[in-house]
Image 1 (cartoon, rainbow, N blue to C red):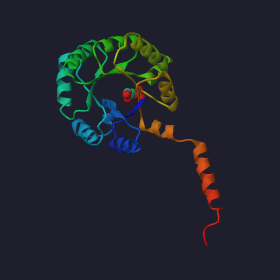
Image 2: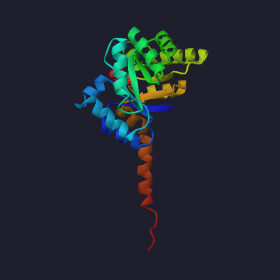
Image 3: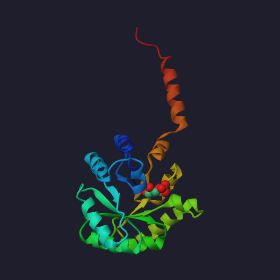
Image 4: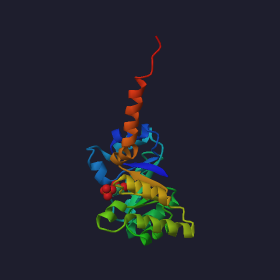
Length: 216
Ligand code: G3P
């Protein structure tokens, strides 16, 4: 499973990339607003040290505007992927952008039928938001299971990005289901690494090391 980091914070991205586990980045207006930086400059900096896909979101609500924003954003770097909301105009825009070989990530997906239509437009990625479904007592992972099945039935090439991940169990379930990508916030990446038995084990090894006779 590919792991993307779901943040617009350059320090977090750099640190996660240094771990050797990061395949890409996803941003959205909410994440970017926390950084108090100009969006284009921020994306330029991220793409200067990361060659994997970096998702950047459009804000237009009509296909024409989305396509024009996408064409501008892709000038920033060749690894920019255009994030487009899963609405009627979004589907039209993705179809046009697919024809121009501009990579797309269709976001705010909350149903398997939305994901089916998204794949038909030729989108490169679809982002089902599982945490937000869990928030309203709908099992987010059930959606990933359904999309996986539908895409396998028809051999669709659109990759599933499990998004709106809130905890390590979401990552575990995504991997067990064979999702293509999980986009994970930095805090959850840290939770994935940490295990109390690892820390206790290190402590014991260090204490025992002191008991080993040293060379005179
Ligand atoms: O990738 C989409 C993600 O950023 C949304 O997460 O936690 O705002 O639902 P959240």
